[in-house]
Image (cartoon, rainbow, N blue to C red; front, side, top):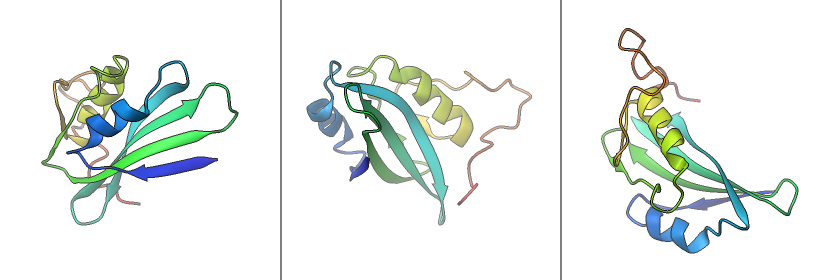
Length: 116
């Protein structure tokens, strides 16, 4: 069972902080999906430890030039996923550097503009 919950970059931290209980939920990853019209869907994906196949996805639609808030103060391991999104889509995530996966001579932002 998957539940998608729409959020915004303005309320994301509050929404995640209210939802997240480290004893109940495992943060799987931060994902990006390129949409039309220079938009991107950012997804924060969680699974419940005690329930098989229970997934909760928080998502927000943003423009590529908007600053995505960091959830590292809530979930420290999110730093890896945040840096991956920076490299793969060329977006800016609060406090996340680029260069985790891509070398200087790599194609930059390889997933930006790849709409479904």
